[in-house]
Image 1 (spheres, one colour):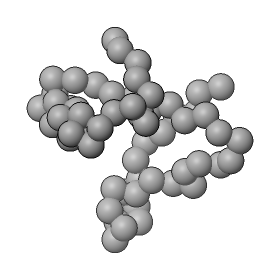
Image 2 (cartoon, one colour):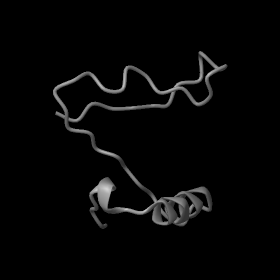
Image 3 (cartoon, helix red, strand yellow):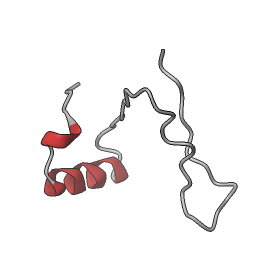
Length: 59
């Protein structure tokens, strides 16, 4: 497993990673550390109010 700062990844790296995830060749997790409530909720599509992305709190 590798750990990267998102700011260090280029758009090309992110596109490649998304492709690997879509092909089930990789897994990726985003960990957010902030004092603000973020994000309020993530929707798969703006028109799908009931389709929310699963998220777990890490404390």
